[in-house]
Image (cartoon, one colour):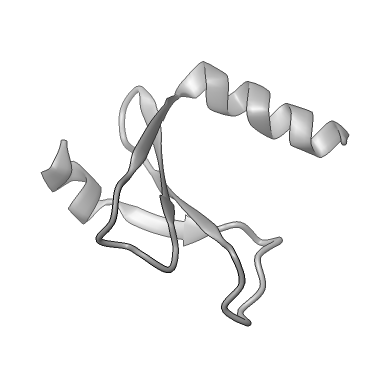
Length: 64
């Protein structure tokens, strides 16, 4: 899985600023999960969130 994460294309939310604030990044196209990491520590830990849980989270944030 680590090899897939290293090859994945990581992106920040369009809501993130470029001023060095607290930002999360997600990697696209990893089957079954959405990897999430701290943009300030790209070599640090990665949290793997299931696709259904990620979709529910995004929907909730959009409704807030």
